[in-house]
Amino acid sequence: MPRSVRDSNLETRTARARLRASVKPYFRLIEPGLHLGYRKLAGGRGTWIARRYSGNGSYAVENLRTPDGELVIADDHSEPDGERVLGFAQAQQRVKAPRQAVGSYTVAQAMDDYVHFLESDGRSELSIKETRRRIQVMIRPKLGDVKVGALTPDRLRRWRNDIAESAPRLRTANGEKQNYRPLADNDEARRKRRATTNRLWTVLRAGLNHAFNEGKAESDSAWRKVKPFRNVDGARVRYLSIDEAKRLINACDPTFRPLVQGALQTGARYGELGRLVVADFNPDSGTVAVRQSKSKSRHIILTDEGRAFFTQMSRGRAGDELIFRNTGRVERTEAIERIRLQAEGKAFDGVEIKDRGEWRQSEQTRPMLEAVRAAKINPAVSFHGLRHTWASHAVMNVMPLMVVAQNLGHADTRMVERHYGHLAPSYVAEAIRKSAPKFGFESDESLATLHPRAA
Image (cartoon, rainbow, N blue to C red; front, side, top):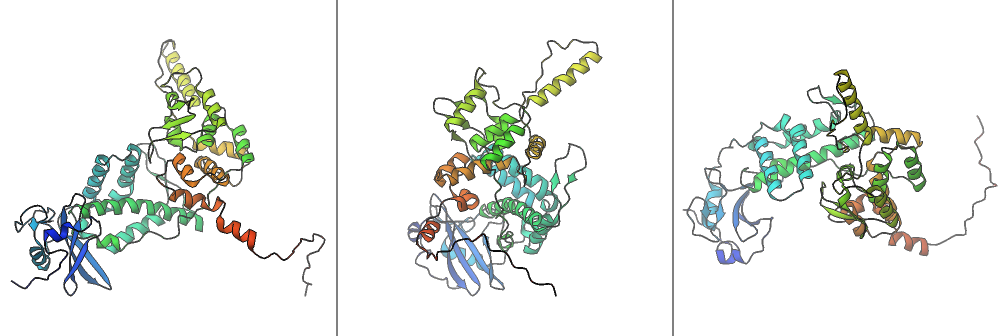
């Protein structure tokens, strides 16, 4: 047997016990172009990893596995068996052995396993639903049947680029041919499409990384070499001035107006507002409980104006009633049912309409567009812009960014800093305006602009 490489940090279980748990492996050079890595997981269990030079300054990293596909672990808590439990010297021999053939594990299976992991990890139901939708619509059709081991950087880049260059999907009735919005030929349209592609790429990469960490993929080098599109998340946040917000409220259809007011008072998302029931509002503490969200449940703290608005919306109503109801759709449903029963010679009295009046997906789009046009707001703003409006004015009014993040439902301030940080009073800006030299410049409006003579 060839002589083994020595390493004081890895060759004994006692030495490995002193290492900190980390996702990043501890590597040792075994021979030129070949490293053996040890990844210490939470709980003290360690796994063995091979890192091989693949040319052009890059490396391929893979978990060691048994012939049955099980993850090979280190002999940290049990004696080595030469198969699934290996010591440092045995792991060296394994990485030097010929590599196993790529298995039959597909991208679709990897995505299914990833969704199951999210469910078991306690992620929000809405977040999982959105992840599942993205997988079903954009990942499975092109990559679902591809073996994970057969993925290449070129194939993944082509998938990414094809999505970025394709037309955005439009809401389409079940059973109908998918509708698409024409892709505008301008920089902003391309930026938006690439930003959407990056979100899809995040889901795909997370699923593939989960497969690799679980020992179901030999290497993660294919997707590590593919990067998301750069500089596409810097969209200018569109928010309303206070005057524009008042004009919008006045221009809204009466059935839609409360929903707009609720968004401006809370900064909540459309889906969050549509699920609020009367019992979610606590008039004593002046808070609204968001129990289902794409991020995390939270209590939104209201201003005195917001408390008065929600008190008015909840007065005299049962706790399980929706605070915001699409009464227009309920009335249309009742009218259609009345006409149907009259045509059949039946009485309408006593017929129960099961429509609770919840605001459903995309039902806010048309009334919002009509209100924006009636209020002569230009450039236009979407319903999500009402969330931006609350956050932007809160930041400009010197609300701490962490407080803004908590009310919006973000785990930390990163998203708030990205979208609204430029609106916050800056120490640097204040220091420059206070201390930079001043030259006594005064505007003289009596000066006329000179125009060059015609040739």
